[in-house]
Length: 185
Image (tube, rainbow, N blue to C red; front, side):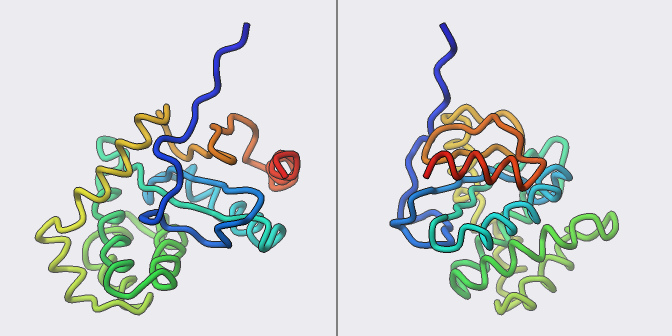
């Protein structure tokens, strides 16, 4: 008898960052870490899937910073949350993309100064984002995502769920990942 597959806890809700229609036949959830090199490799694949599936795919991102091995990940997640609250969903997704695109530029690409600069590029007030980071305003929001990942059986990043069920298939190639998503449709 095979082990039961892990399921998403809690299910996608109003507080999640979602791109794509709520009634899409497939919801892809990623638990990610903005400093994780594997998440950075997954990022362009997810973007390709979003383009390929269009309105048939809703993509949801939840924070899962592995702070012990990625010391900048927590602040990067908090900065993204600050941008979302202060400038909206479109700005959150711009920030999300900027974080992954600049992650490996240099060792300081995710320090607070860079995070503020990316926030401004995404359309948020950089000074407000810095103040939110200093005050750890969005730490609890990030920790709530992290704990939902723990309850869902996440133990590394990236971890994906397709329609609420953990995806343990091969995300490293768009073709394989797309075929598994198509099977869910």
